[in-house]
Length: 503
Image (cartoon, rainbow, N blue to C red; front, side, top):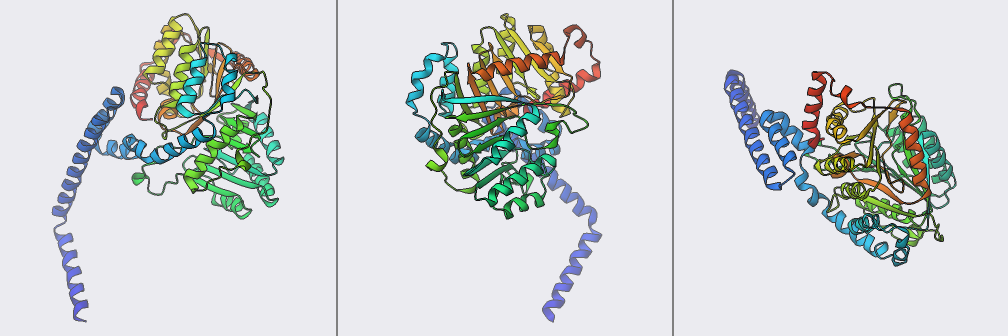
C-alpha cells in the first residue's frame, strides 16, 4: 500500500512538472530535436562526401539537406542510403556469382558460335558475360509479344500446360480481372500437384489484398514477398525494389518484359487508355538462365536451394541458326552497374541507328553524352517517350533533357495513341534489348532488373517493325516550338531534373 502511494505521488508530481513547466519542456524538447537533426545532417553530409558519389548526386543531396534539413533528413533515410548497398547485398552478390560460374559461366560450346556475331557487336556479348557470367545461347527461340492481350493470352496458355513447376516473379500484382484469371489458373495447377512459387515485390504490390494471397497459399502456392517493409524509416532496403517480371514454366518456357499483372496493361484504365507494351516469349536453352535468376532471388528471400536437375535441365535444342539470346540480371547486388554499362556499350557500338523506347527517361551523364555524340556523328538516333505523364516528376525531369538532345540531332517522338510503356533499345536493326529496365537512374542503380539481349534474331526485326508503327502513332517534337514552352514549365522541368539523381 505504501509503495502504491509512492507511485501515485510520483506520477502526480511528474504531471505537475509537465503541466506547470510546459513552456520549459517544450523549449528543451524543441532545442534537443533541432540539435539532433543538425548533428544528423552534418554527419550524413560527411558520409555522402566520403562516398565519392558522382558530383551531381553529391551536390544535390548537400543542397537538399542544407535547404530543407528535416525533410532532407527524412528523404535520405528513405532513399539515400546507398552507402549500405554493397553491405546489404554482399552475400547475395557472392552467392549469385559463384552459382552462375558453376552452372552457366563455362558453357564452352557457345563460344564456337561467336562467329555469328559481328566484330563490333562482340564486345557487348563479352561484357555481359564478364559482368554477370550469363552465356549467349544460339539454341533458343524467341517471339515478341506486342501489348497486353497477346502477352496475357500467351502466358495463360502456357501456364495451363504446366506439369511440374511454375515460377513467377513480379513487381506489381493486382487483385483485378487479370489478377483473378492468374489466381484461378495457379490454384488449379497447384491442386493438381504442380509446384507453384510466386515472388512479388512488397512495395510494388502493397495494394495486393490479403485475401488474394491467402487463397493462393491455401491452395498450396508458395507466396513470398520480396523485401517486406514494416518500419519504412528504419528499413535500409526500402529503396531497392525487385522490378523484374519473370515467368518460367517447367524449365522450358520463359517470359520477360515490361508487363506486370493488372487490368491497366489491357487498356482498361480510363486515364491511360490504350497501353502500349512489349514482352518476350522464350523457349530453349536461355530459359535456364532466366530460371537461375529466379532461383537465386527465391533463395535470397527463403533460404531454399532448388539448384537441381528438376529445375536447371533445359530442353535439348539444336542451333536455331537465328542469332543469339543472352539473359542478363542487374541490380544493387552487383559490383558494377550492369544494365547501364550494357546500354552504354550498345549505344557506342552503333554504326547506323539507335532507337530507344522508354516510359521513364532520366539518363546519367554517361548515357546522355553517348546519345548526343552518336547523333552529332550522323547516326539515326530516335527516342520514343509517352506524351501523357504517368509520374509527373519523372515526366518533367525527362523533358528537361530534350533541348540538348534535340540540338544534337536526336529525334524525339511522343506517343499519342495511349500510354507507352515499352522498354526496348534497337541498334542498327540487328541488336536489341528488351526487358524490365527503363532508361533511368533507378533502373541503373537501385532496382533489380532483367533484360534479354538479342543478337541478330528474327525477334529484332519484329521490334523494328513495331517501333516504326509506334513512330506513326506519335508526334515528333519540333525543337523551335519546344524552345518556346512557357517559363513555368521550364521551371518545373529544371526543378524535377535537380531531383532526378534522388529519384
